[in-house]
Image (cartoon, rainbow, N blue to C red; front, side, top):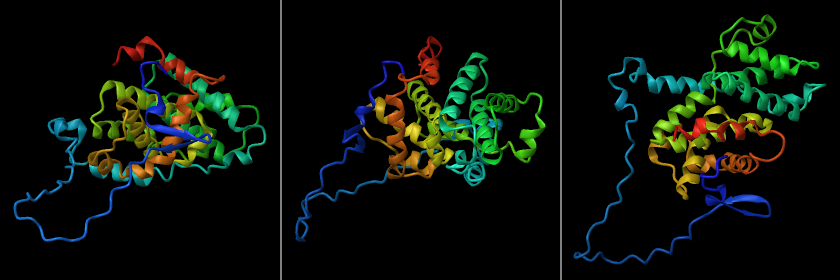
Length: 284
């Protein structure tokens, strides 16, 4: 990841190789009840308002703002259908988690080289995992990856994969959630780029399948915000539109920070090299 980003340690501290979030000092005990001083002002803490993040699109018929809440409620229901068993690799005789990671790292570079749509990458990985969860593959993993990429690009269809998936390729991936939550966070280009970087790092890691697409997207936005600004923040608007509280993001956040720290090391550096180019710096 480019050096301009604030280090992950800005939001997390580590002890015994395990990330723990900084907690504020406990509040002092309340004073015993006493009759209020009439001279003291009545201080009322106002709740943070929920922003209408779709107001700017009100005149855009393509944004369909009157249906957007129902649309994302539907996405949240449908994302459960696209999840795969987190232990599906156990049924694969010739494959393992490392081989999957190598494949996806390579596909990320192919996707970037051909300048494909962002949604295509996430749909490609979704198709691969769902296919491998249902069918054992012998020495043809790269072919599976290419077929998934072609399907996601809406090119010539491949019967075996489509029939295995029962022609169901219209399930929500992390990407639509990421776009929605970035909008809720009123994120700038720097935050958007870092969140995209983090969520693509998560694509490579098999263990991240345990988290729902919407949770991964919310965590990527949250982690990017905290890293750039140097302090924890998750607004009421973000919580309202993501349906996740800050506490619910913590476990996934720790995992994502760990991936960020290792992004430039090891053999699988496709995501790091992709985002460490002038093409992405020019978008900030």
